[in-house]
Amino acid sequence: MSDAREADQPRRSNEPEDSPRGRRSEQSDAVSDAREADQPRRSNEPGDSPRGRRSEQSDAVSDAREADQPRRSNEPEDSPRGRRSEQSDAVSDAREAEEPITEADQPRTGTGGTGTGDGGPRPRRSGQDDGGRRKYGPLGAVLVIIPTYNEAENIAPIVARVRESVPDAHILVADDNSPDGTGKVADELAVEDDHVKVLHRKGKEGLGAAYLAGFRWGIEHGYGVLVEMDADGSHQPEELPRLLTALKGADLVIGSRWVPGGRIVNWPKSREFISRGGSTYSRLMLDVPIRDMTAGYRAFRKETLEGLGMEAVASQGYCFQIDLAWRAVKAGFHVIEVPVTFIERERGESKMSRDIVTEAAWRVMSWGVGSRVNKLLGREEP
Image 1 (cartoon, one colour):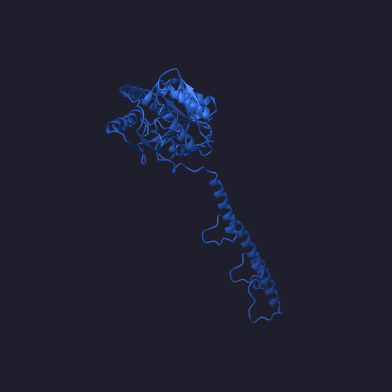
Image 2: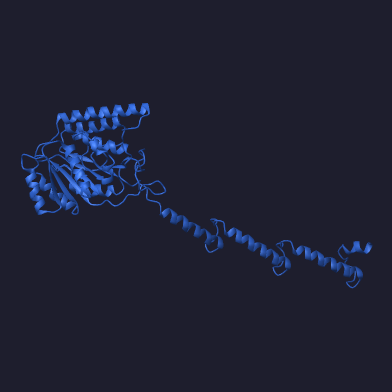
């Protein structure tokens, strides 16, 4: 029993190796070494010892686990961790590349989107990606609608400028049986140029009715974009490409005089006061962010017009433009304003009258009051 106890103790230095105690001590050391071989190798163990080999295997497993984690900023790119992290970054970049560009670089926005931070509902139409951002399809064929009444002196020059500015666009002259022969001049232009069409109407029924008739004609004939343009040259055809470019990311684009970069030329102060005042009044009464509510230089997508309920529009003149802009905002369409230069007509007479201004004032007030009442009572907008 005493020998067994002593065998568990390290061999004393003065015991000969071939003594019984020496042999027993050697056996005890072997057992101890076997046990220690199962433990991770200490830092001072040689790599070719049993302990070293076991520790190296443990380190390999640990490295494999760490390789699944994103590479830390101080890891070299050619390490296992670095290569795994590069693959993860590549997948992340690919996913981000599929996201549509935001509209932060777009011109001023009237509703929806993120262009200027103006709040508003998202468009209530199809064509949205998984992120909730709109995807706009191609524009399609462009039709420029030019209503006329006694514009015989102006129609040929404005048609020529449109054809030069946007050669692929078609032009529809909607003439209200002008006494000065504007319709006849338009017919002659149509004979010479197959991009020019003429819509002859029975009589003078107002700007709104002429545009509505032009919209219906354009939609029936398959045009994807419908543009409003005056015949007197106040709307510059050379600026039309800017509107069409903006329409690639919008439902309605308004050529605006009252946003930064927009301006007017040769207008009397009284006319500017009426225009600015009318837009401000409409914006406040109807609670919309559009700055130039009365602007008549506009580009619509076909789908936008189809969603505005044109059959219910009965307003004319200034009020017609306010009506369509407000309907677009209520329907959740994305409206953009781009700056344009408005030049007072040089030939012919303006169609502006006191009756047009009066109609706009009372209709806008009626719409605004009705809208507020509906909100208070929890009713949906008509």
